[in-house]
Length: 213
Image 1 (cartoon, rainbow, N blue to C red):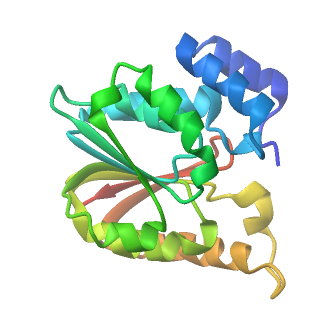
Image 2 (cartoon, rainbow, N blue to C red; image 1 turned 90 degrees about the horizontal axis):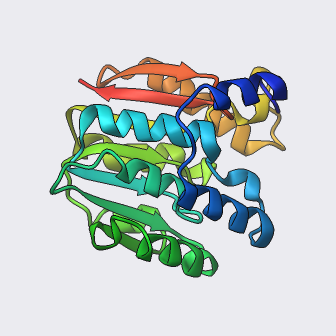
């Protein structure tokens, strides 16, 4: 679902910070060679992630869902001088893409890539994290959140992607659509969670920005 017209989107992109050349190249590679390229964060959302990272200068970033590494590199832009990113991806077929992108970046030695089930891997990570980006299996969002919420420092941020789920959350979800049911309930639960302040934004497919109190 497109929440804003393409000409408005282009206008926003033209009047935002430009997409760095390495990310443009990664975007082209993803579009040409990878299934479901719509999953890529893209220019506007990427600049959003980079700006929030720069605002808080995180030392420890956790990303759940690497895909081809575009969002990872955006998050890296704000890293503290001694900062580090840990990113988790379950699909090992994507590894050549993000490994290549990371190796040629400014942060090659500051990114740890883990392949496997995030639910299991998260039990082995201690934190505290300054910034967490969740963009993986939507049906597992509640499990990811439960696993990381107490590992985020006070004042730290959690950014969650796809919270509008192509607009399906506006409809009454059916029993044949469990992902929409889960995302809608997840969104509702966040608004009543006293551990976080929540702002949901209609950026791309919906982003919720949570501040750990």
